Length: 291
Length: 268
Ligand SMILES: Nc1ncnc2c1ncn2[C@@H]1O[C@H](COP(=O)(O)OP(=O)(O)OP(=O)(O)O)[C@@H](O)[C@H]1O
Ligand SMILES: [Mg+2]
Image (cartoon, rainbow over all chains, first blue to last red; front, side):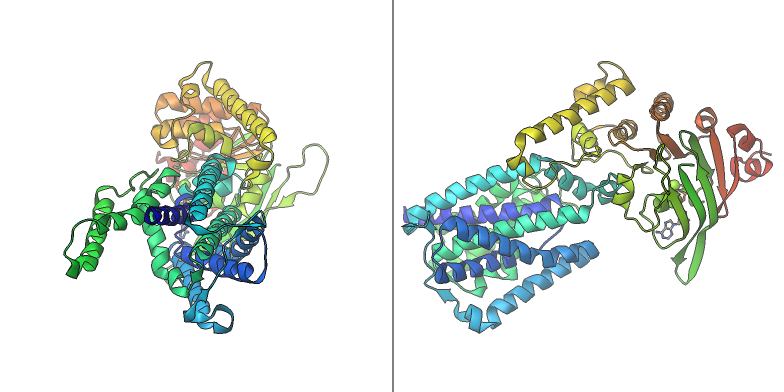
């Protein structure tokens, strides 16, 4: 039972991450490969605030989301000047820099040793949310709220402008909207909610180290997004479901012990490749991925 | 004059050489009239539109725009403004060979063309949902009104408001893009080849729409290769060649001009 709850909690965290990635990547057509950097920034800020201050969950969440959002401005400013591949490289650089800082600034982040003993979040300031059941409830409620929030966001006038930017920035400019401004908003929101995922992860696992927030992790998030499909809400949610649950299912396929781990990796990779081959627009996506 | 274009010069670098596309071009666009810009392929007509609407910078010369209505105000200079700012001043544009936004519904395409940007701040709907819904409804009413006025009562587009932009034929997309320009309260409309790729029945429709634009107090500057269309519609025609406006006149004067006949129309 606890095993299943753990998977659901991780699924909820990934739903936040993949939905956040969908905002710049799926809606604004900005291929960002630094989503894990925002996730990590959120986790480290959370560790600091949870260890140093005795604040209720909502307050920590708001602070962490704002701070992570502010960090996104570094990337947004790049998006104004750099187009296409150059922008992707800028996000790659950001990802590397964040990882390097987390890994090497040992006085603050404890570098490769990571930070342990991160306390659980305190709901309403008093009840310490502990145990797997508490986190199951909290992350499920939050992921449902975020699904609703992002669903509405996409249908709102803001989502309309973002969808337009994905198709044609010149048209957006010609009707008097500045695409750069909307991209900044999209990145801010994306980073903020990735930061929230970082908070949930850090306080749930109670230990973080830089290896959870690498380029690989960013690519993992994007993989989930592309498998599920970009643009709408059910695509990213479904993508998170596939990448989180599929490896767990493969655990139960009777594979010979000696090579189980490797075989699982191969099968997992193969399934992903086949999915992309037969469903290039993702399983539930709104549109084809274009370059 | 609504728009005064003075001494515009622009070169594009191609490899080592640089080509002068516009070479001291002057053009005046009078208010409330239809001005047609004609000229050969590659003459620089679209480039001139890009300059006016702020997409092309790095040129020399002056563009002044007088959006002042009745009270005398100094005309605004557009050279250093960004494209979205220029649009907000009241200059709208139909791009050469662009249709509707493919992944938005017709209604969203129309709403997006509105100059009212309220509610476009992320999560704004969480805080002032009622007011926002009212504004959205207003935009929808306006879109329906425009479609009714342009295409008649119970026209088929009213029933297709929720169809995606890419589901319309190219000609329809051009017509509907023109319709979208009524959503923003523009004073000057730059139409780049509104009839290209559109069948004769639709061309009559487009003529009609452009006349309605002028009747609504708008000024139109259009690029066109279809001379019958220009002859029917335009008040003033400007002929562009060698990076300059070579002649300006009424449609008849231009059509009978010997140089235009030889070098553009290809008749002796
Ligand atoms: N960004 C650019 N870089 C280099 N050359 C360009 C650029 N934009 C346009 N040109 C060149 O400028 C010239 C004028 O192009 P423009 O699109 O303005 O022509 P046009 O008059 O609109 O022609 P058409 O009637 O075919 O649409 C062309 O020779 C084109 O190749
Ligand atoms: Mg052109």
